Length: 152
Ligand code: HEM
Image (cartoon, rainbow, N blue to C red; front, side):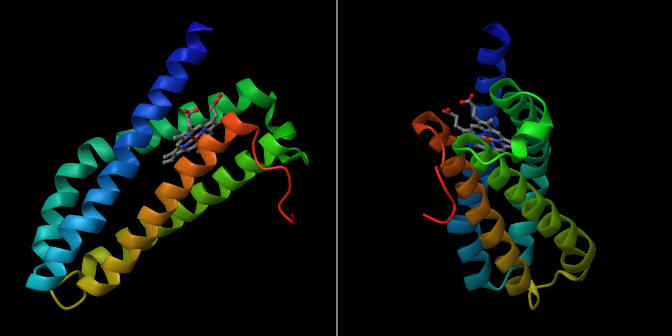
């Protein structure tokens, strides 16, 4: 029970940092940077946010996998056709999307970042933010029994 409480608390704390940080970036820092045509405003925020945001994402992954194992047992069960497994499948899909966007931004977009290329990074930021919110919605659905069926 104690380890479940610790893992869930760390998971929720990580969610506030990851989703909250991206929402602040996407809704306040980014619009101003685009208006002022100043990519540096985004890089400055990202440099400070990285220090807490990346460890928070790592904590999400570790505690998320632990919680999935706690709820459903071995990873083989995570791909069965039941409402909780559907949520885990969605979360794993969102994780792949987040990592793909982060790697693409790091390797392709950030090295060429300038005031003129900021709109490309802006789309990455908006997408990662939407995915972060979807993570929260999927996570909270577990309390209601998960998603019964994909097809309705
Ligand atoms: C940035 C990524 C993530 C965010 C923002 C996030 C967010 C959340 C939130 C808000 C909850 C609801 C907690 C509650 O019941 O109050 C939750 C639950 C949960 N998440 Fe995540 N999550 C993330 C990644 C993951 C990953 C990668 C997995 C593993 C596949 C995962 C597995 C779970 C599980 C199993 C629960 C249910 C815990 C329980 O009620 O026992 N999460 N998540």
